[in-house]
Figure 1 (tube, rainbow, N blue to C red):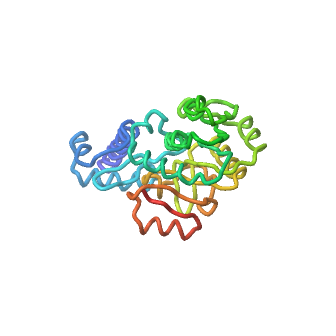
Figure 2 (tube, helix red, strand yellow):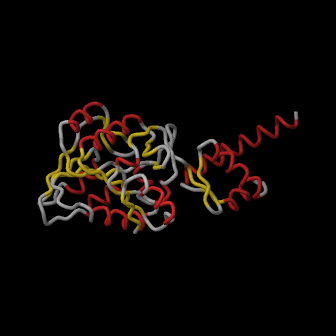
Figure 3 (spheres, one colour):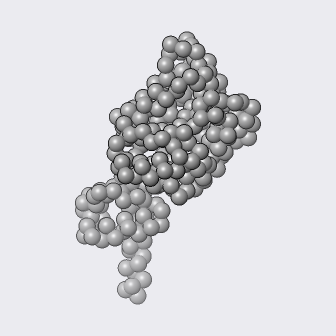
Length: 260
């Protein structure tokens, strides 16, 4: 009887930890121990269990939630986390434009920053499923914006479903700037929603070159739907918070890895 109660208490505690992590973006061992009234080692044990179940990823002193089929952060939340890092990454990614004239810009906050960093002194056609990306470029004099039609997802303000992918399939695009909820050497690039995965996958098929831009916390994370292998990328742009040794492992799969 005691064992069953203890197990139930642990399960409830772990559910609460996941709820807090998803609501706030991260959790701290010390704060959780105080809030839950348990020892730090108990919290660390809970975090190990939750990481094993693919719900959290541990960091030094805490953890953050893994995006999955059942949980995805909103665009509004993404606009408040790791912002200086995302701006550096976006500027470096936009610098890889080369002679591209047609560009796909993915949904998400980092791709939106890439769009804002694109040069305004040359003619570009930008194809996107993202309403915020389209809005940020709509008044740029030298940029022609093509917004893909479809069902708008409320959390990310981006279009999906067969209308979107069919329209995208009709283009040959010079360069695609792609985001992902997770990137790992074993499972490639992943995202929680199958409809989003289809759009990303089609963008990569339509593009001659593909660049992934994402913060260090994306690496090693695995979400529900796989849409590309790491080898499909020309380049990965991230920050120096991704260790050089790990960046090298990704480069062995094909892409150039740029840390800024």
